[in-house]
Image (cartoon, rainbow, N blue to C red; front, side, top):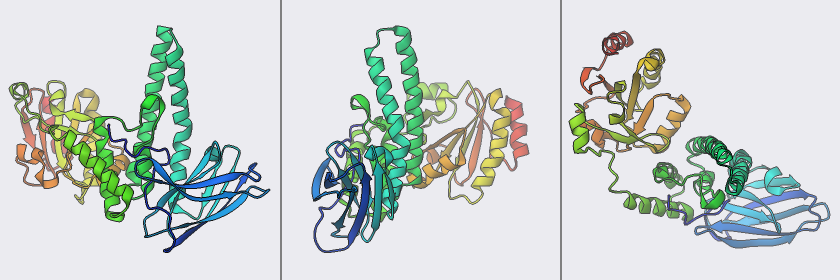
Length: 386
Protein backbone atom coordinates (compact mmCIF):
# COMPACT_ATOMS: atom_id res chain seq x y z
CA UNK A 1 0.00 0.00 0.00
CA UNK A 2 1.58 3.27 -1.08
CA UNK A 3 0.10 5.69 1.39
CA UNK A 4 3.05 6.17 3.67
CA UNK A 5 3.12 9.97 3.73
CA UNK A 6 2.70 10.03 7.49
CA UNK A 7 5.14 7.37 8.60
CA UNK A 8 6.60 7.55 12.07
CA UNK A 9 6.53 4.88 14.73
CA UNK A 10 4.61 7.10 17.12
CA UNK A 11 2.69 8.64 14.30
CA UNK A 12 0.43 11.46 15.22
CA UNK A 13 -1.06 14.52 14.17
CA UNK A 14 -1.80 17.61 15.01
CA UNK A 15 -1.47 21.12 16.09
CA UNK A 16 1.62 22.99 17.07
CA UNK A 17 1.85 23.53 20.79
CA UNK A 18 0.81 27.05 21.50
CA UNK A 19 -0.24 29.26 24.32
CA UNK A 20 -3.86 29.64 25.23
CA UNK A 21 -6.51 26.96 25.40
CA UNK A 22 -6.43 23.98 27.74
CA UNK A 23 -3.31 22.30 29.04
CA UNK A 24 -2.19 18.76 29.74
CA UNK A 25 0.19 18.37 32.64
CA UNK A 26 2.78 15.60 32.59
CA UNK A 27 4.88 14.44 35.54
CA UNK A 28 7.28 11.55 35.36
CA UNK A 29 10.32 9.70 36.57
CA UNK A 30 12.83 7.78 34.48
CA UNK A 31 14.81 5.62 36.88
CA UNK A 32 18.47 5.51 35.92
CA UNK A 33 18.27 8.81 34.01
CA UNK A 34 19.73 11.24 36.55
CA UNK A 35 20.23 14.80 35.23
CA UNK A 36 19.37 13.67 31.69
CA UNK A 37 18.47 16.11 28.92
CA UNK A 38 14.99 15.51 27.47
CA UNK A 39 13.29 16.73 24.32
CA UNK A 40 9.50 16.96 24.24
CA UNK A 41 8.29 16.79 20.65
CA UNK A 42 4.92 16.67 18.94
CA UNK A 43 4.62 14.69 15.72
CA UNK A 44 2.62 16.14 12.85
CA UNK A 45 1.42 14.96 9.43
CA UNK A 46 4.28 14.22 7.09
CA UNK A 47 6.46 12.52 9.70
CA UNK A 48 7.81 15.80 11.01
CA UNK A 49 7.93 17.03 14.58
CA UNK A 50 7.52 20.27 16.50
CA UNK A 51 9.55 21.11 19.57
CA UNK A 52 7.29 21.53 22.59
CA UNK A 53 9.85 21.83 25.40
CA UNK A 54 13.38 21.03 26.53
CA UNK A 55 14.20 20.08 30.09
CA UNK A 56 16.53 18.09 32.28
CA UNK A 57 15.60 15.46 34.86
CA UNK A 58 16.64 15.99 38.45
CA UNK A 59 19.08 13.73 40.29
CA UNK A 60 16.26 11.19 40.82
CA UNK A 61 15.23 11.17 37.16
CA UNK A 62 12.05 13.18 37.82
CA UNK A 63 10.63 15.79 35.45
CA UNK A 64 7.48 17.70 34.55
CA UNK A 65 6.16 19.79 31.67
CA UNK A 66 2.93 21.14 30.19
CA UNK A 67 1.44 20.81 26.72
CA UNK A 68 -0.89 23.60 25.56
CA UNK A 69 -3.77 22.94 23.15
CA UNK A 70 -5.32 25.25 20.59
CA UNK A 71 -8.50 23.15 20.47
CA UNK A 72 -9.95 19.84 21.68
CA UNK A 73 -7.97 17.58 19.34
CA UNK A 74 -5.56 15.13 21.03
CA UNK A 75 -1.87 15.31 20.20
CA UNK A 76 0.90 12.71 20.00
CA UNK A 77 3.91 13.61 22.12
CA UNK A 78 7.32 11.92 22.36
CA UNK A 79 9.51 12.34 25.44
CA UNK A 80 12.96 11.72 24.01
CA UNK A 81 16.44 11.05 25.31
CA UNK A 82 19.44 10.75 23.01
CA UNK A 83 18.63 7.16 22.06
CA UNK A 84 15.12 6.33 23.31
CA UNK A 85 11.66 7.74 23.86
CA UNK A 86 8.24 7.32 25.45
CA UNK A 87 5.19 8.02 23.23
CA UNK A 88 2.05 9.64 24.61
CA UNK A 89 -1.36 10.52 23.19
CA UNK A 90 -2.56 13.49 25.22
CA UNK A 91 -5.89 15.32 25.44
CA UNK A 92 -6.63 18.73 26.97
CA UNK A 93 -7.06 18.77 30.72
CA UNK A 94 -5.29 15.49 31.43
CA UNK A 95 -2.95 15.10 34.39
CA UNK A 96 -0.54 12.38 33.40
CA UNK A 97 2.03 10.37 35.31
CA UNK A 98 4.77 8.53 33.43
CA UNK A 99 7.48 6.24 34.75
CA UNK A 100 10.08 3.95 33.25
CA UNK A 101 13.19 2.03 34.12
CA UNK A 102 15.94 0.85 31.82
CA UNK A 103 14.79 0.81 28.19
CA UNK A 104 12.20 3.58 28.14
CA UNK A 105 10.03 2.36 25.26
CA UNK A 106 9.88 -1.24 26.49
CA UNK A 107 9.27 -0.60 30.16
CA UNK A 108 7.20 2.54 30.62
CA UNK A 109 3.86 2.90 32.42
CA UNK A 110 1.38 5.74 32.13
CA UNK A 111 -1.64 6.87 34.15
CA UNK A 112 -4.22 9.62 33.74
CA UNK A 113 -4.46 9.56 29.95
CA UNK A 114 -6.85 7.20 28.18
CA UNK A 115 -5.24 7.77 24.81
CA UNK A 116 -1.75 7.17 26.15
CA UNK A 117 -2.81 3.99 27.91
CA UNK A 118 -4.42 2.70 24.69
CA UNK A 119 -1.25 3.55 22.78
CA UNK A 120 0.87 1.75 25.37
CA UNK A 121 -1.26 -1.40 25.09
CA UNK A 122 -0.60 -1.40 21.34
CA UNK A 123 3.15 -0.88 21.81
CA UNK A 124 3.46 -3.65 24.39
CA UNK A 125 1.57 -6.02 22.09
CA UNK A 126 3.68 -5.34 19.02
CA UNK A 127 7.22 -4.41 20.08
CA UNK A 128 8.47 -7.93 20.83
CA UNK A 129 6.89 -9.43 17.71
CA UNK A 130 8.26 -6.74 15.40
CA UNK A 131 11.71 -7.23 16.90
CA UNK A 132 11.43 -11.00 16.34
CA UNK A 133 10.44 -10.43 12.70
CA UNK A 134 13.38 -8.10 12.21
CA UNK A 135 15.76 -10.71 13.63
CA UNK A 136 14.34 -13.45 11.38
CA UNK A 137 14.74 -11.20 8.34
CA UNK A 138 18.40 -10.54 9.17
CA UNK A 139 19.13 -14.26 9.56
CA UNK A 140 17.23 -15.06 6.36
CA UNK A 141 19.22 -12.50 4.39
CA UNK A 142 22.52 -13.95 5.63
CA UNK A 143 21.90 -17.64 5.14
CA UNK A 144 22.89 -19.61 2.04
CA UNK A 145 21.26 -22.87 3.13
CA UNK A 146 18.08 -23.48 1.04
CA UNK A 147 16.52 -25.66 3.72
CA UNK A 148 17.12 -23.06 6.41
CA UNK A 149 15.85 -20.30 4.11
CA UNK A 150 12.60 -22.19 3.60
CA UNK A 151 12.19 -22.80 7.32
CA UNK A 152 12.93 -19.16 8.17
CA UNK A 153 10.52 -17.97 5.50
CA UNK A 154 7.73 -20.14 6.88
CA UNK A 155 8.40 -18.99 10.43
CA UNK A 156 8.45 -15.35 9.31
CA UNK A 157 5.12 -15.79 7.55
CA UNK A 158 3.53 -17.37 10.62
CA UNK A 159 4.75 -14.61 12.93
CA UNK A 160 3.75 -11.87 10.50
CA UNK A 161 0.22 -13.28 10.09
CA UNK A 162 -0.13 -13.59 13.88
CA UNK A 163 1.04 -10.00 14.37
CA UNK A 164 -1.27 -8.65 11.68
CA UNK A 165 -4.28 -10.45 13.14
CA UNK A 166 -3.60 -8.94 16.55
CA UNK A 167 -3.16 -5.47 15.09
CA UNK A 168 -6.34 -5.83 13.01
CA UNK A 169 -8.22 -6.69 16.20
CA UNK A 170 -6.75 -3.60 17.87
CA UNK A 171 -7.78 -1.37 14.97
CA UNK A 172 -11.36 -2.66 14.73
CA UNK A 173 -11.89 -2.50 18.50
CA UNK A 174 -10.44 1.02 18.85
CA UNK A 175 -11.68 2.79 15.70
CA UNK A 176 -12.50 5.99 17.56
CA UNK A 177 -9.05 6.38 19.12
CA UNK A 178 -6.25 8.24 17.38
CA UNK A 179 -4.03 5.41 18.65
CA UNK A 180 -5.44 3.33 15.77
CA UNK A 181 -3.52 5.56 13.38
CA UNK A 182 -0.20 4.22 14.59
CA UNK A 183 -0.37 0.62 13.31
CA UNK A 184 -1.68 1.81 9.94
CA UNK A 185 1.72 3.35 9.28
CA UNK A 186 3.82 1.02 11.44
CA UNK A 187 7.16 0.25 9.71
CA UNK A 188 8.94 -3.07 10.03
CA UNK A 189 12.10 -4.39 8.44
CA UNK A 190 13.39 -3.69 4.92
CA UNK A 191 10.83 -1.01 4.09
CA UNK A 192 7.83 -3.22 4.86
CA UNK A 193 4.81 -2.14 6.85
CA UNK A 194 2.26 -4.15 8.80
CA UNK A 195 -0.43 -2.87 6.44
CA UNK A 196 1.30 -2.89 3.06
CA UNK A 197 -1.11 -4.76 0.79
CA UNK A 198 -3.47 -2.90 -1.58
CA UNK A 199 -6.41 -4.66 0.05
CA UNK A 200 -5.47 -3.19 3.43
CA UNK A 201 -7.19 0.02 2.38
CA UNK A 202 -10.30 -1.36 4.11
CA UNK A 203 -8.68 -0.74 7.52
CA UNK A 204 -7.57 2.78 6.58
CA UNK A 205 -11.15 3.49 5.54
CA UNK A 206 -12.61 2.04 8.73
CA UNK A 207 -10.39 4.18 10.95
CA UNK A 208 -10.87 7.26 8.76
CA UNK A 209 -14.66 6.94 8.86
CA UNK A 210 -14.72 6.69 12.66
CA UNK A 211 -12.17 9.43 13.35
CA UNK A 212 -13.78 11.81 10.88
CA UNK A 213 -16.90 11.77 13.04
CA UNK A 214 -15.08 12.28 16.32
CA UNK A 215 -12.23 14.56 15.20
CA UNK A 216 -13.34 16.12 11.90
CA UNK A 217 -10.92 19.04 12.04
CA UNK A 218 -7.87 17.12 13.29
CA UNK A 219 -4.97 17.73 10.87
CA UNK A 220 -3.97 14.11 11.10
CA UNK A 221 -7.47 12.87 10.29
CA UNK A 222 -7.63 15.29 7.36
CA UNK A 223 -4.34 13.86 6.12
CA UNK A 224 -5.56 10.27 6.58
CA UNK A 225 -8.70 11.03 4.59
CA UNK A 226 -6.54 12.46 1.82
CA UNK A 227 -4.48 9.25 1.81
CA UNK A 228 -7.63 7.15 1.57
CA UNK A 229 -8.99 9.27 -1.26
CA UNK A 230 -5.71 8.97 -3.13
CA UNK A 231 -5.81 5.21 -2.73
CA UNK A 232 -9.45 5.08 -3.81
CA UNK A 233 -8.58 6.86 -7.02
CA UNK A 234 -5.77 4.39 -7.65
CA UNK A 235 -8.02 1.36 -7.29
CA UNK A 236 -11.23 2.81 -8.68
CA UNK A 237 -11.17 0.33 -11.52
CA UNK A 238 -11.03 -2.62 -9.10
CA UNK A 239 -14.77 -3.41 -8.97
CA UNK A 240 -16.19 -6.00 -6.61
CA UNK A 241 -18.08 -7.33 -9.56
CA UNK A 242 -15.54 -8.63 -12.08
CA UNK A 243 -17.84 -10.78 -14.19
CA UNK A 244 -15.77 -12.09 -17.09
CA UNK A 245 -17.00 -14.18 -20.00
CA UNK A 246 -15.27 -17.17 -18.42
CA UNK A 247 -17.19 -16.64 -15.18
CA UNK A 248 -20.49 -16.41 -16.99
CA UNK A 249 -19.89 -19.55 -19.02
CA UNK A 250 -18.88 -21.61 -16.02
CA UNK A 251 -21.50 -20.44 -13.54
CA UNK A 252 -25.26 -20.57 -13.52
CA UNK A 253 -25.35 -17.93 -10.77
CA UNK A 254 -24.05 -14.38 -10.96
CA UNK A 255 -20.37 -14.12 -9.92
CA UNK A 256 -19.38 -12.20 -6.80
CA UNK A 257 -15.89 -10.92 -6.04
CA UNK A 258 -15.95 -9.17 -2.65
CA UNK A 259 -13.32 -8.59 0.02
CA UNK A 260 -13.43 -10.17 3.47
CA UNK A 261 -12.55 -8.67 6.85
CA UNK A 262 -8.83 -9.15 6.21
CA UNK A 263 -9.04 -7.38 2.88
CA UNK A 264 -8.67 -10.54 0.79
CA UNK A 265 -10.74 -10.83 -2.37
CA UNK A 266 -13.09 -13.80 -2.03
CA UNK A 267 -14.55 -15.09 -5.28
CA UNK A 268 -17.78 -17.06 -5.23
CA UNK A 269 -16.60 -18.77 -8.42
CA UNK A 270 -13.70 -20.35 -6.51
CA UNK A 271 -16.24 -22.46 -4.61
CA UNK A 272 -18.35 -23.62 -7.55
CA UNK A 273 -17.73 -27.29 -8.31
CA UNK A 274 -15.93 -27.76 -5.00
CA UNK A 275 -18.52 -26.92 -2.37
CA UNK A 276 -22.23 -26.77 -1.81
CA UNK A 277 -22.73 -23.12 -0.90
CA UNK A 278 -25.14 -21.21 1.29
CA UNK A 279 -25.08 -17.70 -0.15
CA UNK A 280 -26.36 -15.64 2.75
CA UNK A 281 -27.27 -11.93 2.68
CA UNK A 282 -27.38 -10.33 6.09
CA UNK A 283 -26.60 -7.20 8.13
CA UNK A 284 -25.34 -6.39 11.62
CA UNK A 285 -28.49 -4.24 11.98
CA UNK A 286 -30.68 -7.36 11.72
CA UNK A 287 -32.08 -7.94 15.24
CA UNK A 288 -31.96 -11.73 14.94
CA UNK A 289 -28.44 -11.83 13.48
CA UNK A 290 -26.70 -13.38 16.49
CA UNK A 291 -29.32 -16.08 16.94
CA UNK A 292 -29.40 -16.78 13.21
CA UNK A 293 -25.61 -17.02 13.01
CA UNK A 294 -25.56 -19.45 15.93
CA UNK A 295 -28.09 -21.68 14.16
CA UNK A 296 -26.18 -21.51 10.88
CA UNK A 297 -22.95 -22.23 12.77
CA UNK A 298 -24.37 -25.53 14.01
CA UNK A 299 -25.12 -26.59 10.44
CA UNK A 300 -21.70 -25.37 9.30
CA UNK A 301 -19.86 -27.38 11.96
CA UNK A 302 -21.87 -30.48 11.10
CA UNK A 303 -21.48 -30.42 7.32
CA UNK A 304 -18.39 -28.34 6.53
CA UNK A 305 -16.08 -31.35 6.29
CA UNK A 306 -18.56 -32.95 3.91
CA UNK A 307 -18.20 -30.10 1.43
CA UNK A 308 -20.48 -27.36 2.74
CA UNK A 309 -19.39 -23.70 2.77
CA UNK A 310 -21.08 -20.40 3.62
CA UNK A 311 -20.48 -17.23 1.60
CA UNK A 312 -22.03 -14.52 3.74
CA UNK A 313 -22.52 -11.05 2.22
CA UNK A 314 -23.00 -8.25 4.73
CA UNK A 315 -25.05 -5.27 3.58
CA UNK A 316 -23.50 -2.71 5.93
CA UNK A 317 -21.86 0.61 5.12
CA UNK A 318 -20.26 1.13 8.55
CA UNK A 319 -16.84 -0.45 8.14
CA UNK A 320 -15.75 -0.16 11.76
CA UNK A 321 -18.95 -1.65 13.16
CA UNK A 322 -18.95 -4.56 10.70
CA UNK A 323 -15.26 -5.37 11.20
CA UNK A 324 -15.73 -5.33 14.96
CA UNK A 325 -18.78 -7.61 14.70
CA UNK A 326 -16.89 -10.13 12.54
CA UNK A 327 -13.95 -10.23 14.95
CA UNK A 328 -16.16 -10.54 18.03
CA UNK A 329 -18.32 -13.30 16.51
CA UNK A 330 -15.26 -15.32 15.44
CA UNK A 331 -17.02 -16.35 12.25
CA UNK A 332 -15.38 -19.35 10.61
CA UNK A 333 -17.01 -19.15 7.20
CA UNK A 334 -16.45 -16.62 4.41
CA UNK A 335 -17.82 -13.21 5.39
CA UNK A 336 -17.55 -10.33 2.92
CA UNK A 337 -18.74 -6.74 2.52
CA UNK A 338 -18.47 -4.11 -0.22
CA UNK A 339 -19.65 -1.34 2.16
CA UNK A 340 -22.17 -0.06 -0.38
CA UNK A 341 -25.14 -0.82 1.85
CA UNK A 342 -28.43 -0.87 -0.05
CA UNK A 343 -26.55 0.11 -3.21
CA UNK A 344 -24.54 -3.11 -3.22
CA UNK A 345 -24.32 -4.67 -6.67
CA UNK A 346 -24.61 -8.06 -4.98
CA UNK A 347 -28.21 -7.24 -3.98
CA UNK A 348 -29.09 -6.28 -7.54
CA UNK A 349 -27.40 -9.36 -9.02
CA UNK A 350 -29.54 -11.72 -6.92
CA UNK A 351 -32.64 -9.49 -6.81
CA UNK A 352 -32.58 -9.51 -3.02
CA UNK A 353 -35.65 -7.67 -1.72
CA UNK A 354 -35.30 -8.35 2.00
CA UNK A 355 -32.62 -8.99 4.61
CA UNK A 356 -31.88 -11.65 5.64
CA UNK A 357 -32.10 -13.73 2.46
CA UNK A 358 -30.22 -16.82 1.39
CA UNK A 359 -29.69 -19.17 -1.54
CA UNK A 360 -28.47 -22.77 -1.58
CA UNK A 361 -26.16 -23.41 -4.56
CA UNK A 362 -25.24 -26.94 -5.65
CA UNK A 363 -21.91 -28.18 -7.05
CA UNK A 364 -22.93 -27.24 -10.60
CA UNK A 365 -23.58 -23.64 -9.64
CA UNK A 366 -27.37 -23.91 -9.70
CA UNK A 367 -29.65 -22.35 -7.11
CA UNK A 368 -31.66 -25.24 -5.69
CA UNK A 369 -33.43 -23.60 -2.74
CA UNK A 370 -33.76 -20.28 -0.92
CA UNK A 371 -34.99 -18.51 2.22
CA UNK A 372 -35.42 -21.43 4.63
CA UNK A 373 -37.97 -21.16 7.39
CA UNK A 374 -35.93 -23.25 9.81
CA UNK A 375 -32.57 -24.92 10.34
CA UNK A 376 -34.25 -28.29 9.82
CA UNK A 377 -35.45 -27.17 6.39
CA UNK A 378 -31.93 -26.04 5.49
CA UNK A 379 -30.51 -29.39 6.59
CA UNK A 380 -33.04 -31.34 4.53
CA UNK A 381 -32.16 -29.40 1.38
CA UNK A 382 -28.46 -29.65 2.14
CA UNK A 383 -28.57 -33.43 2.48
CA UNK A 384 -30.14 -33.70 -0.95
CA UNK A 385 -27.20 -32.05 -2.73
CA UNK A 386 -24.19 -33.13 -0.66
